[in-house]
Length: 466
Ligand code: BG6
Image 1 (cartoon, protein in one colour):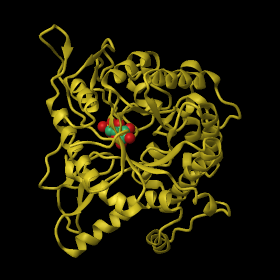
Image 2 (tube, rainbow, N blue to C red; image 1 turned 90 degrees about the horizontal axis):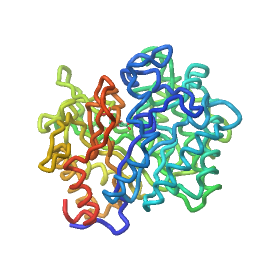
Image 3 (cartoon, rainbow, N blue to C red; image 1 turned 60 degrees about the vertical axis):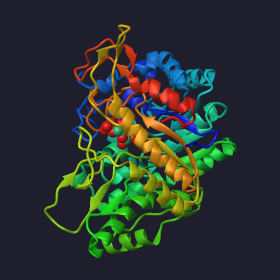
């Protein structure tokens, strides 16, 4: 067993789930700062003290300590996002906030000090709150110009420090979570399909525009889209179930299809026609969409089933539910665990697109118990996490043997952070334990879990020893 040389091993976080410092050095509030129960929960008028994300794991002040630990594990790459509202506090002002820019300069410098490449998500569920309240987020076309100004600013500033860029985190999730993913304040049940897909169109144009602008500024850099991947299996061999899968797949694949191929697929045009959706597409939009990505990146946590039957058990999952698969076990949060689904989706994407793939999120959220080891050091015996990651990496290797070009693998939440869906700290993904509980209590001290040493050896052996 071996992985390609130059394989990008690492870990991933998002600014809003770890940085804290929500109003420090000129940062403006984002939608995360008013959703204390997670971005699927209700919005509060103002940021409230019970919102763990306001302080996160204080990565803003502790990043040096944390990156040192990532370097100790041997990370080649570290995925994080830039908090848009640190750079443009309201999102629509003409000039950026220098203190916010300086923070990411220092962060990327710290990565390079250890030979770690930053992989940057430009928008990870952290739309500036003002853009949501004033413009209804991506439902409004004007966001394309605000986003273009923001990405031009950060591309120009970090052109010599960042080679890998992702435009929007899990862009397809906007269909399910318009506020979280699209910054759209209109409640989902009041949002028409017309307005939802119009918002999608704005994001797709903005994403392609970012790739276009980025290439002009940094011809050597690589630009990727990022989707929430979801293998969907027919619950039975009934052809109706298979067709139900195909339609569900289309709803997800549509986003990557546009990013990779540069135009709207026929099945979506048909869907729009039949649903009476008439997108407002401006003259330049079609041309902008032709600026396609260099690679496709995705998160992978679970698979699901589809059926036309009614009354079947549902499955919870990473932001999108589905039908329960009777053959799979699930995590403590009900997410179905399916390592082979990762090989399946890697093959599916490569068959479809023939461009390099990057797994930028995968991991197990679990309740860890802090113990003391024989040397008196606090640690966690997280064999369950090691098993989860090992089984998934075995399937990544299978896909590589199948001929799929996989650029790298960044585990989600390489250090414990605040969960996106539930805003808990007790849903831990990290190799590094952070002493903080769901009530916000704890010293914020960092402790290495057993998986820390396991992953260190995986990277050191380039995946030969899983
Ligand atoms: C992905 C998101 O959907 O899943 C991350 O990109 C998120 O932001 C991750 O944290 C895990 O989900 P959760 O809800 O367990 O934090």
